[in-house]
View: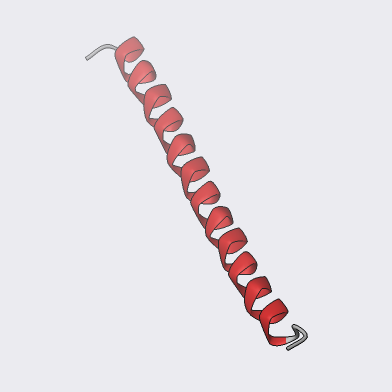
Length: 50
């Protein structure tokens, strides 16, 4: 293996790590948004005029 090949592999691995971190961030963020929406529905339902 040459140094150029190692540098390309290293750059590719860093790109993959950034992609995984970004995907995890969006999944976590999306889950919290969904949970907040469900919580809001329960809150509004509890305080609805019956």
